Image 1 (cartoon, rainbow, N blue to C red):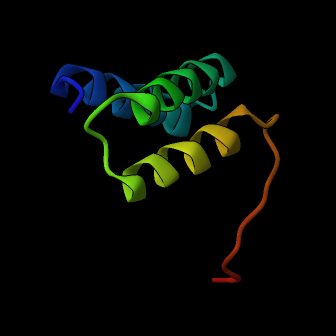
Image 2: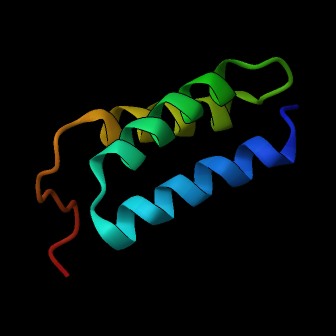
Image 3: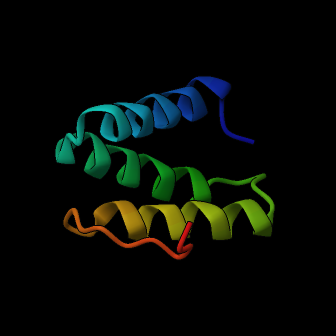
Length: 69
């Protein structure tokens, strides 16, 4: 299982992106999540979540919401 500092780094970058809209933070979070998902000891569900988040964060900013709320 990856070091908790790596997970904290990914979450920090994700929050910076969410709070500021910084696309560079989104891209860095995507790269880190991709690497985390590929590490030994990560279960398949977490791998899938990391992959989905990485793909979403790698896209150019666009307003896409799955929920109408």
